[in-house]
Image 1 (cartoon, helix red, strand yellow):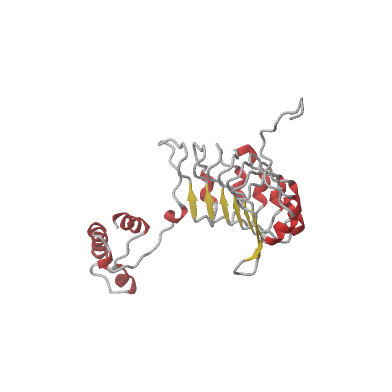
Image 2 (cartoon, one colour; image 1 turned 45 degrees about the vertical axis):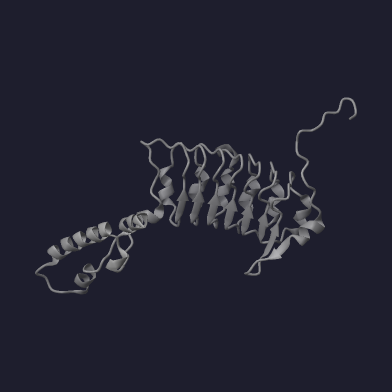
Length: 255
């Protein structure tokens, strides 16, 4: 080694050529173009893939990436972007210009609240966002603008509270906030699925003894209120076993 030169501790990573990238493009079942460069020890965003910016899906997961360049906005057709398991500390503002994006996976990186730009809220069509296994202490307020969001992963972070505005996301179906240091006196909001009252019609034989007893007691209370009145469609419906979402959850636990 020449005098005065120090050996770099930074991983050089694997060099990706345009030919390699072209060979990594596959068609999905629904005919979309999927560029898979996952688990290839890539340490620097390969500029050559900008020549393939018409792909619909881009997988750069399980690499050594520390930065995503602003040129990511040239992938105007992207509907699916997977960056999980890299070394990302900050996201580019240009990410908010990927207006067709439906799914964004940022799990298992080094992101903090300050590393997530407000422009993330411009992804109005985003349906799935995974921010799990990062270093997020407070939830970015930009997420409140993602009205089409259906799945949100926030597990294994440093959250001490979850804002109530999560309840205002009209389409949220799945929320994972496990393994966060949320104190017992500040419990997380209920999963949106559990907050919706649903009606389940099941056979009595499918219920355990405890759940069956609860349903019969509820049915008895309904019958007592309706006794002496005319028989209607509502009366008949009330005589069915109709556990709500809480009873359905209890049944799953017993099984």
